[in-house]
Image (cartoon, rainbow, N blue to C red; front, side, top):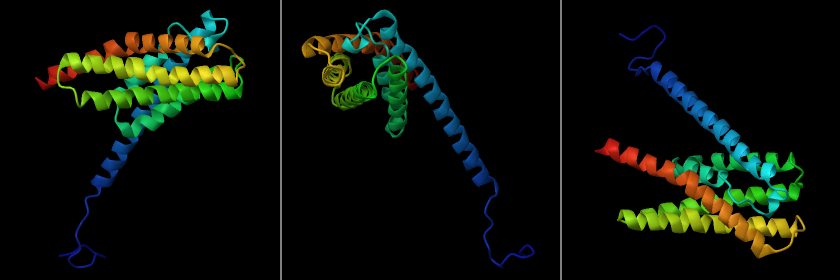
Length: 206
């Protein structure tokens, strides 16, 4: 017999399912927000380092840890979340630059450099990793893509910004410093984290 006010033969829908879905969605949003806040804070802290120990940070830093941080975050997260992480990185970079005397044009250019670099490096790394079978080949692919190729793009954009917008001189010198600083950042920061995550995943699979 149907309940009062219900049409005969109506199918009952579990009332708990929508609530469970909403709770799951809210928990996922909270996790993303927490990671975004942590990423923004850590990136800003790392981006402050050149301003603390360099007289002209736009000329490139000898060591830039945020370059490794962004590669880690992209490499360990689904691609659908990449736009969020890159937006956080760009916002943090612009905020740090503007609060330390850089012009809006330079801040935007440096933000573009620090977004394109990890995007290109990580995309190339994923592409290479799927086509390389041995550990040695994958290590070489990592060095060629995340450590070398990505920072080349960042260095080119950063040096161009420093010359065209900032009025600097010596494009190759600035690009070289940018590349070394970002490559070391990826090598020192990203390498152990990505290696540990790979080892942990392999251990779970076994």
